[in-house]
Amino acid sequence: MEKILRTIEKLVPKKIYRFFQPAYHLTLAIVGTLIYRKPSRHIYVIGITGTKGKSSTTEFVNAVLEGAGKKTAVLSTIRFKIGEHSRANKYKMTMPGRFFTQKFLRDAVNAGCEYAIIEMTSEGARFFRHTGIEMDALIFTNLSPEHIESHGSFEEYKKAKLRILNQLEKSNKSIRLSIANIDNEHAPSFLVAPIEKNVGYSLKHVHILSETNTSSTIEYLGTKITIPLPGKFNISNALAALTLVHELGINIEDAKKGIESLSLIRGRVERIEAGQEFTVIVDYAHTDDSLRKLYETFSSSRKIAVLGATGGGRDSWKRPVLGKIADEYCNEIIITNEDPYDEDPMKIINEVAGGVTIHTPQIIMNRREAIAHAFTLARNGDTVLITGKGTDPYIMGPNGTKEVWDDATVARDELEKLLRRQNA
Image 1: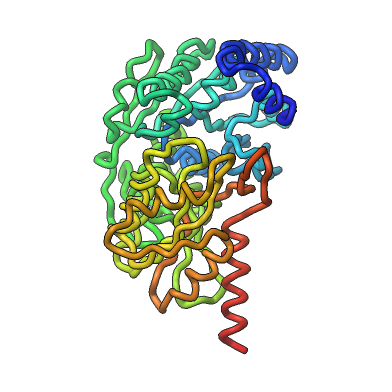
Image 2: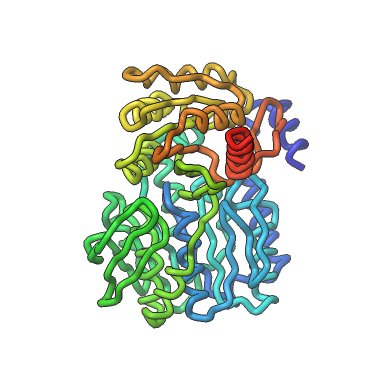
């Protein structure tokens, strides 16, 4: 189907294609809702949206609900989970279309799940993939410039996010709840819906007892909770989940148990261990703010960046910005290929390199070779930060071609090779 649509897009004039595209996706969403008999009416649906932190917040919400003994379903950039069964999301999109979400919800209902946690994106809203989902709650994490080319402007991008809030407003659920991160300047727009509850959360609502580059400990509602992932951004993500379960009346000790059991979120500050003397992190960071916060989390160590850029044909404005941030925080910078699609990959890399003025970046087109080289530069106590892809399953090339990929797997392979050479 994807190949057919790509062919149609090439044959039909752009204006005509874009005119009919919304109607096509809206029709599919409505038909899917009817075929699967409006499953969202029979399960508590939690939507999670924002520019950054959606997937991590989804996992924190799942963890606190499971800590309370609830049976959950998860649809996110990282995975699709129903009860005990989980599989990786290989679609290169958070919200697959063509009936996928409605079937997922129907399967979750049939499996006896009490809660469905769905990561919702502006691109998904743009193509009506949120249509027909009756939500009980929506969590807003933050908003910053992203997907500007596809939406046309930041204002249009924000409107796409607000369409998700509008979907909550239209829901027939009895107690609709909007939860927003009031540390972000755009939170007020997500707290004015004419619904039953609008609740803000903030880092000011917790007492941060300690922070290291492996975990944080906070006090929330008089309870000491250790978050087994580093960074203030993860404290904020965990706080979103804690705010939700507090509103749901779930015991704080159960929520604590869930948070403290979450030792790994794939592709999100994911540590790769093979017995090396330096730290290796794989992270999805692909915005200027998320990259800066990731580097700040490891401020006490010498840092080696393996840096890509946004995919070809999108958000070209931030390429030199990402290079500049790496230049500011890192000691060694390796710029490599990421997802060029139909754009010249060397052009993308050179635009990233244009932001690097203090250091001399190394350009290694092959991503595996770039990762392997970063490890040869690392000394005891250093941190190698491989950013941009996280759990993305492919490197996307021209004309729909793709290479099977996983940063964590490649990093582990190359670490093991390095250690075997050192021990030979």
